[in-house]
Length: 356
Image (tube, rainbow, N blue to C red):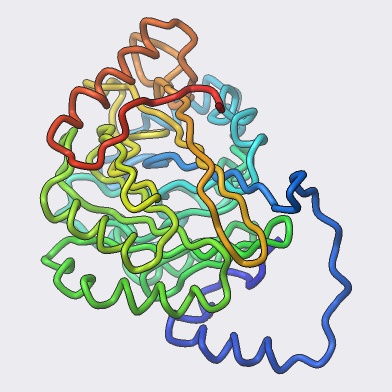
């Protein structure tokens, strides 16, 4: 359930201080619900993250590759989730980067290479996937202007899906643990402002959250390695108190760093991507991280990856993310991450696919 519903009028970061004070002033609190604990009394939280979730079509170009596949699937919106729902059912929170506007508003960004949108009813795809929260701070959030953005946010709220933007963080509660989700993008030199803003935002949301996760849309498309600015901002975010940073935008997987005891996943690549019927690289992965929470203290308890192809087919993209089962394919994903991490000073040295 939501500790605070995500709506278009959900509190901005600057309002969370007042919210914390209001909570403290409440005279009566509901009786706590028993939650499963570890032998030491801690609560284990598993968070899953995936990269770009893009469904629907480019309405400006009139392309119909997603709609054509949906027809082949007899209109069943759950087809996207067919091979990965089990993964997300085994966690406490799943987060992706949503790059599709759920709107009927006209196109606003007419000069974009892609303008993604889908009918609001397609929010069912996110629900079928078992995804509880989305980052909605990216270069496609305004494809249909303010009207499209607000319709998307309202649609997500009505569906019970938390969403986060730079102005409106999300707070999600599970097992009695509050998880704050902040979202940013770094385009148009915005990273300059983020050097000051991110620490302020984390300090504010930390007052009411046990775990803080930061999602950042950054870097250059098709890059397999984070640039210097990404590394600076990622480590600054951990230094400011974030428990986890995960990124997206490049449509390619990037290595993971473990910096000051916390993970920075620079890019999770694509997850479901309807922008191309056959992308040149269809490999990606789902990241799962575990935290132990006890008496307000958060400890990181490792991670694993689920290597996937963004399609159930090798020959073309059918928008059905599918875990790899052949060891050769799994090794290819792992070796790509390892080979591209040679110049990262805090890069992890292994990518487990099972929990230790």
